[in-house]
Image 1 (tube, rainbow, N blue to C red):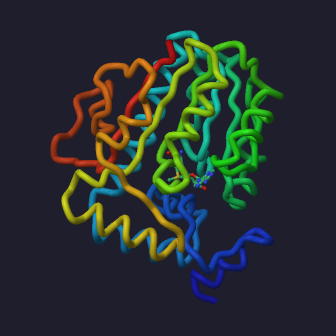
Image 2 (cartoon, protein in one colour):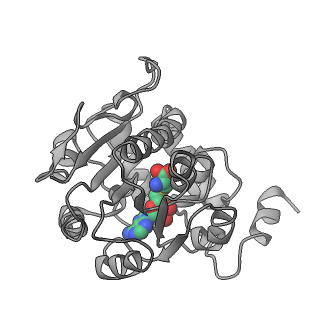
Length: 269
Ligand SMILES: C[S@@+](CC[C@H](N)C(=O)[O-])C[C@H]1O[C@@H](n2cnc3c(N)ncnc32)[C@H](O)[C@@H]1O
């Protein structure tokens, strides 16, 4: 049996491995093993269009860590992380609980393979952590489930890290952000990263088209202004919406790496 056949046999029951899925494509870019032939094909095609995608996703994970550490430093110890992805190093609860072991995280994702890994994700945690199988468009279910674990009268960190490109403008992603943030109190924080259509001219458009074609739904990369609009109404923290590697870096970023991702963090006043 070839490598692909062996992997196909390992697919959890009920998982469609014939179509590429973003969580598994992303896993491949991060060097993980939870991906299948269709995912790897799509991932390789995007890498051809955008050779910096691998350093880009690594940088995206680092942004997640810096954003969460910032929030814990502001006293935020409750998180809703939508678009969790397949568990990997530096998951939100690990970052937050390293600073404050009482930190609680509600993970939300709509991919069955992410759900299949949720049990592994939730082992060895120092404080209650839950996993919600929901689409980001289902804000009512997300808030209801989050309210079971978190105290929604206290500040929450809402994370949408490399998620909103999966929600086309027709589904009003800005409205989803507003609905979720409206349910959270002052002092809550919002962190967003999203692939940029206005970095790496040509290659990002090709990557967007490849993902749309291989995954079978509209993927939307956005401009810096388009991403900044998600933060409208909140206090956008310095340095604003920037290439992710430039958001409060721990060490000077490598100027030769263009990640093709915008990111920012805001505080609700
Ligand atoms: C590119 S991965 C990002 C994973 C993680 N946030 C990170 O940045 O490392 C995008 C994740 O969003 C999830 N996702 C995509 N569309 C979604 C939706 N409509 N509702 C909930 N999750 C979604 C995918 O299943 C995948 O796990």
